[in-house]
Amino acid sequence: MTVAFSPGHITCFFHPVDSEGILKTGSRGVGIRISGGTEVSVDERSDSRIVTSIDGKIVSAPVTENVVSQIAPGRGYDIEFINDLPVSQGFGMSASGAISVALALCHMNDVPLQEAYKFAHIAEVEGGGGLGDVSAISCKGHQPVRVKPGIPPFGEIVDTGIRFERLTLAVLGSKLKTSSVLSDIDVRRRMIGYADAAITEFVANPSKDLLYSHSRSFSRTCGLESSEVESALNLLSEYGNAGMCMLGHSIFTDLGQEEVREILGEETEVYSCSSTDVMPFIRKV
Image: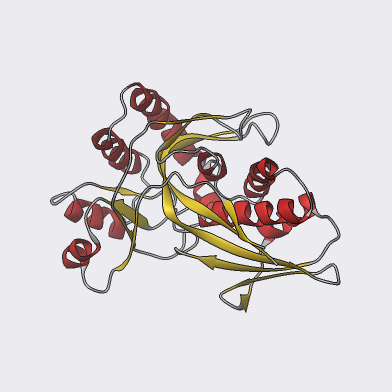
């Protein structure tokens, strides 16, 4: 059995980019690599079945199957996920899971470990998941900016050096599929219209204040905030900084867990994390 771990990633503002070739397709955007992520255990089977489970429950996992088909076609594996954070809420769990699976399989099949990012990126894009989380996670830094879309060496990611010692994440609604949002042509147009210039401005003079400011303006301008997210951001902004996670019914803030619960209600689903420069790694064999 091989066990691998990858941190997650929050996108704060971005715009999708369709290019010729899947390795050049992705997004430009500003985000935060977060300490919460995904641990994956991979064990080879004697048959060709791919059995994927989360916390012991067998699930359908087309992105995982895509990763396996790229690295070890025709081989069977038992693959168990342990996510620190909910999926489909803008925390990069799909990407961190894809990277962890790819990393474990590369290790087991004598494939260079750096190739794991390429396999995970392809699976994410083809599966309609995140367009930039894999490339952002591949950058060793706390606060990556995807200045050029795609996976390196086609894409380009820079680290601003900004760190977030404390982040609280709050889930405020049901799961949100990235593909369902990005299929809206009007939404994509608004994203490009706002984020293209905002990313350039941020890279020129990065700061926490500017990140939070652009994050909130982006979600408002693009019409991405649900009523619950909008209400939560309005309340939290009276006490600290907060923004919407792309793309989820969720928010990130520099306020503490207890403060968030006091402001939004004790029943609010909250998680604590920080930014991180830890790279995905093989935990044990």
